[in-house]
Length: 476
Image (cartoon, rainbow, N blue to C red; front, top):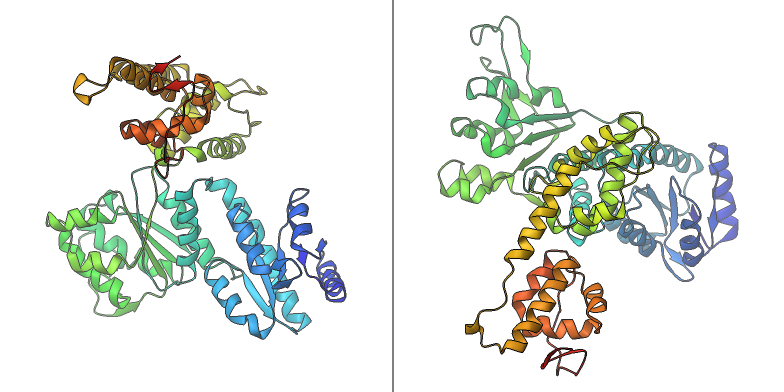
C-alpha cells in the first residue's frame, strides 16, 4: 500500500515497486486506505506523514491496534523527523526523509519485503492473539523492548502463558532490519544440574573437568550478536548467581578452566513463573541480580484474564496444528467454544494447545467440525455445574428482605448461565442492561461474575435507580 496524497510522487513510488517485482495500491486518503484493508492484505505499507484527513503516524497506530504487523515505512519531511524516530521505537520498520535516493528506497523496500514474510508467518506460527487489552499491552511493550536492544528484558507470568513466544517475537523485531536473522539461543535453567550449568552457559576449556576432552563452546559464545533467552531464571543455583550477575553487567565471561575473557555482544531476555521479589525475601535469589535483570519488565497475563482472545486463539492454533499434521483445519463448534470460555485453564495456552491437538487427532479427516475430547468437555461442564450449585443466596445477616434475596439469586444465576455477559443476561431476564448495572453497583459481590468473563464492570454508580422489570419489590 502506498499512502500518498501527491499523485506524481505516488506514481513514482508505484513504478519503483513494480521495478522490484511488486504491485502497488495507491491510496490518496486515510479513508480509502481503511477501505482497501477490507478488500485485501498488504505485505508492506508506505505511509506519508501529512495526509488530507489525518497523518501517517495515526494510520500506523490504526494498523497495530488491529494486529496488522506488516512492515511500515514512513515518508517524512524534516519537520516530522522526530515523529518518525519515535514511531521507530514503537515498531516502525524504517523512515525515509524527502527527497530520497531511488537506490536507498529500493534497498529499504527489499528488506521490508523479506521481513514481511517472516513477520506474518510467525504471527500464525506462534498464535500471538491480542484482542484483549492485556495482550495489546504485551505487544506494545515487546515493540518498545525491541527498539532498545541493550536493555535486559524480564518476562513474568504463569507456566504456559507463552513467555517464550513473546521472547521470540522480541528477538525477531530486534533484528528485523537485517537480511539474515542472528542466532536465537534458549536455555531452560531448570533442566541443568548445578555442576554443568556453568559449562553449558559459558563453555569449558579442555581438561577443565573430568571428561572435558576438548574445548567446548558455551551458549553465550554461540549466541554471538543474537539473543540469549534464559527461561526459568529463578532456578539458577544460588552459588552461580554471582557469575551470572557479572556476565549480565559487563558482558564478559570466561570458559570454565580458562583465564581469557570473552565478550558477549547480543541481547539477554529472561523469564520466570515465580516472583523474584519473593525469591529474594526467601534468600533463594540475589537481590543485586534481581535489580540487574528487572530493567524492562513485561508481565504476560494468564489465559483466564484474556478470555476475549479465546475464539481467535483457538482458530490460530487450529490452523497451525492442521498445517503441522498436514490436515485440513476443522472449526470449533460454537457450543464447544462456549464451554471452553467457562474454563479457567490452569495450564494456560499450553493446556489449550494440547487439548486442541488431542482433539484434532480424534477428528476424522475432512470433517468441518473439531471433535473436542468429550471427557474433557464433560469435566468442564461438571465443574461449572458444581460452581453454580455452590452459589448461595445471601445470608440473612446481609440485611436483605426475602424478596431482595430472591432478586439477588436470580441475577446471580442468570449471570453465571450467560458467562458474565451483562447484555445477554439482561435480555434473558427481560430488563435493560442498565438495570443490571444498577444491581451490580448495589451488590458489588456479584461483580466477580462479570470480571471472570472478562466483561466490563460498571465504572460508576448510577445516580438513581429507575423502575424496571426487576424492581426493588423483587422479580415480576
